[in-house]
Length: 559
Ligand code: C2O
Image 1 (cartoon, protein in one colour):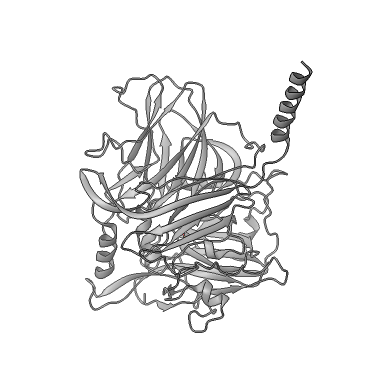
Image 2: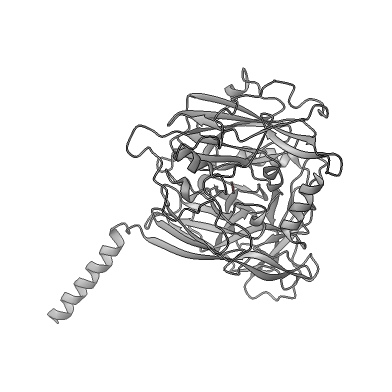
């Protein structure tokens, strides 16, 4: 009896011990084999580049505080690099992944271990290839759970599901990209949108390529929605159910209910959904948002929200998605996004600015004798179309190699003009260069991104590596430095890593430059990135011991 009691108490002590001590940070290891696999969609089978033969690739699961090691082995014929989109990689740009920015790509037959800590972040992010157009098929979700014992700051869901939106081409994506480059024109648009790699039954031969999630009446589901499409901003909705937005880009938001979400390439959105409707089958659907007459793949991808026990013969109902050109919905939706800004999750918005930057986004046409129209479409920031270097910029910076890049990217456009006035079609010649903007460590930066009407206005989702930023203001027309800052939200603006600059408008972001390194800033429409709509910040080292770039790992790929 006494012996039994003793072992009972020992057991209780052990259980208590596990419950009350915060779990130690763990190491999560993954093997990513980049390989060519045959995949069939829309009645076509073709070889695509995948990770571990999966499309989409595997989800990375980690907990806040973990160290993650991902050994990427390249078996494909292309050079590869993988970016962990939204991970801050503090002092550790070596693990960031954009080819020729923070590393040289991993050549065929070689491996590289991405080794990073997940610090101060929790939520949904994603990973993707960051070279050529390979991210069309090489992508997957990253789920970072809060620390053990820390609940979500919203009703705990009964279950969760990753919903990754993508684009599918029947042709080989690299061939599509090359053809566009040769012609100097936009390449062929995609043939389908996908949900978890599947287009859904509105497409031919797609009955069996339909993603379905089974739900139970009365239960609550957390959908972790990622837009991994190359070129399309998307609306996403679920028939018959409203969604509550609780997180964007791995930052908690003030919850609000909506019939549809707007999600740009690069962004993530977590929504809660309650299965509280008549048991049936309901479509989830995604379709592009495009509010200027630029052709896009406007086809609708669908997946099924399937109540348990309902016959597969029931034809699902489609949700009402906003019209493809519904600017009003888009503006309204973005206005509702607010940081949670609670004592536990404060929004530390920089209240003063050390460095003011104003970058114009322009499309242009440079002479190209071999191109179809004698010109090649280009894109630029402050009239500079970025030229990719041959050596990775982070190495060039760290080892102080001369001649790889210049640090003279202008803080404002060379010549001011009426940015969003009548379309400018003359003098579209764009300068070229590998020019970066140097930022002092720990300075507060405000960057206003201004869309222009060079050729055409268009909405551009901008992504900054190495940081989250606060979206303090946005508007239509030309940014007015005398008036617009008065309307900024410096209390609870959305904090994210990718933000849409509205069509013919501007967006102001702020961040504290506390992460030394070379950090890519680019439009997340792959088409525009390829045309040169990108630059990078060189954030200098600080004076403290923890304020310098870490030494490069031994296995960093050579160029
Ligand atoms: Cu998600 Cu530089 O990209």
